[in-house]
Amino acid sequence: MFRQIRRLTTTSTTVAGLPLSKLIHRPELWKGLPNDVVVQLYRARVINLGKNYKRSEAELQSILSTASNPVEAQTLYNIYNSTEADIYKADSETDYDNYVTEGEYMEDPLEPYGFDENPTSAQDIVRDFRDLMEFNRKAAFELPQLVKYRKPYTPVNKSETPVTYKYTRFLGEQHPGERKVVLSFKLADLGLSESAQHKFKLLSGSRYDHRTDEFLMSSDKFLEPAQNASFLSDVLADLIAESNKDPEEFADIPLDKRHTEAKYAKKQRKNKQPIQFPPEWNRPQKSTPVNLANLV
Image (cartoon, rainbow, N blue to C red; front, side, top):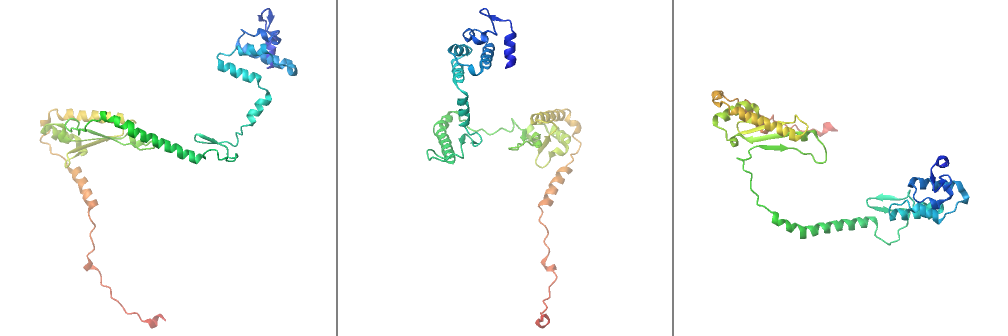
């Protein structure tokens, strides 16, 4: 503040033939000056006069001239006319330490309940009831309007979209398994020729199930599921293109079905019931009489 006064007293700018250092005691000449200069003159006048400082109408009008809208002017008017005691009183009436915020309510635990309103728990019940009534109104008046957008369900034609992409989502958390995509389809749905199907089975290897005629392939090579799905689509397109390229050359190569047989053999062993021990093989147990005299 004293730096501002020193800057005002050393400046050579003049207004109405007076330097700014002389304008401190002439608030009626502050109008038209920049806003920051008016604020500096006001603060310098308050400090310079000290206990002899008194408010004046000319000073108030000059300060109000810096406002850009009526709301800002009203705020400046209230601040200018408020005393230090008023500011202390307004701040002391609010006990910030004892106020507790819960959701959208503000309650004072030290203030006794005057039975003039519902407690917080009751207000929560009323709010939930209002939300329920809002949903009921939507169900009764808005949902019936959606009938005009209703369409009959038509099952997916496997001949048009034989390939299925399976994605995985974990609710409420991020998991690295979400990027994995599984591609599956029935080989008969691709519409390939018999020789092309034979070559496709040779190229598929263990990814083709000879019993169910299902091809299964997955990928988690990339970070995004869309990237893995695109990668699987490119691999499938390359397999189909290679299967249709001179398929008769591989017609005499037999198929290797050992992976399919091993998979179903493992399932049979897993589901197989354990062998029960023959009851006739049990060793007979002889019952020996107990002599009570020996126990005494």
